[in-house]
Amino acid sequence: MSLASPPDSSTPATATAHPHRRTKRWIEEWNPEDEAFWESGGSRIARRNLIWSIFSEHLGFSVWLIWSVSSAFLVAQGFDFTPQQLFFMVAIPNLIGSLLRVPYTLMVGKIGGRNWTMVSASLLLVPTLTFAWAVTNPSTPYWAFCLIAATAGLGGGNFSSSMANINFFYPASKKGAALGLNAAGGNVGVAFIQFFLPILVGGAGIFGIVKASDGGIHLERAAWVYAGLAVVATLAAYFFMDNLGTAKTDTKSQLAVLKKKQTWIMAFLYVGTFGSFIGYSAAMPLLIKINFWVPEPAPLGTGVFFAYYAFLGALVGSFTRPFGGWLADKYGGARITLISFAGLITFTAAVLWTLTQLTPNPNKEVAIAADNEAWFPLFLAFFLLVFAFTGIGNGSVYKMIPAVFRTEASRVGEPGSPERASALAGATKRASAAIGIIGAAGALGGFLIPITFASPFISAPMEATKIAFFIFTAFYVVCAVVTWAVYLRTPHPARAHVSYAKAGI
Image (cartoon, rainbow, N blue to C red):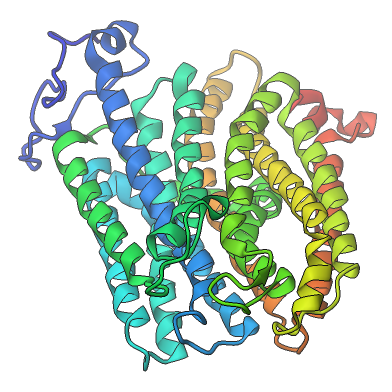
């Protein structure tokens, strides 16, 4: 099917208006696999929706992780919280964000991608405006901070709905690039907020080029900026995005993937990759502050000032994600996933080794901060390599998901049979549904990692950090074994017909 005439930037290509959808922003006929349709205007509409989807998702990730770096400034603004309290606070948004990913995915088919982008962007006003109120009110109790931090999880759901929406706009041959850009744009939001928030609030950034404000820290400034951007994203979705009438979802069939064993195996692996990326991103500013910095003399203290380096991990992990997808295309997703876990094992153990060289920081002795500072370059280098392998693993696991479901479908019936054709046709839908579930499960790692660092049963932050990295290293060993055993191990000849290794996943 081709378009009668190329659509302009404001009017989508549509043949007929749905009688129950009276807005002009609904497109009732959409067939990107038709080359004539795509070339005559479909690609332009898809690209316009992708651009504003990236902007909205980027904003969602930024708000989702706003507490990751702002929590490290709370003490400077006059709030007295322990390291355990701060780690718990930065973990809460990740828990809520992971739980919201499934319903956010389903909402695209229920009310339309444009409409849901408007809703999800406007919801970001809740965490930003309540953040502004809390940090300017010295009497705000800790429990209120936790509730407000939980609302930041609204930004975490944006990834799944944004990916589900853009998936419908592009043909199969172009989905990888479009979804890769969409995902990377969101992930970079983590680095963006961690880089610019210290500058916005009067801390310091850009490796000291920007100096700390003489008037002290003002966290509310960042909240007002992001509240304004949420309004911009809402208006941009209203004016420039479209709903697809063809993007229908069957909730019952989507949730059927919960019964598939492969859904949960892939979710387990994604906890190790994306869960590590988002969890370490949330925890890194506090880890640097607790172990390498003391607050005297003000305003920047002594040792390593966390604001200069907090964003680097998320930046590295964001940029290596597309590289992981490219490697998976070239060499197979399972092989690259196994390599990523080998890298995580190696460099997480290396981070743990550097921590054993440090002297526990009582947050007041300048000499100890100086001694620990000498180990910081190694700590940072090893930690950035950890982030690099989380990004590579994120890309390769996402490559594996459709391959696994396609392989299972290829075992149905005989080659060329209607049963096989039907199974292969349904594999794409099942893979799309599984991505939402797997993404939600994976994001739970972003909650578990800061919680492990908080370890309420351990009073010394340094010991809690060491134990946490030991647990993470052991977990990556299990992930590597699962990857090899399920997807790469050569099976017994009698089981060769169900081998994933033979399929080259």
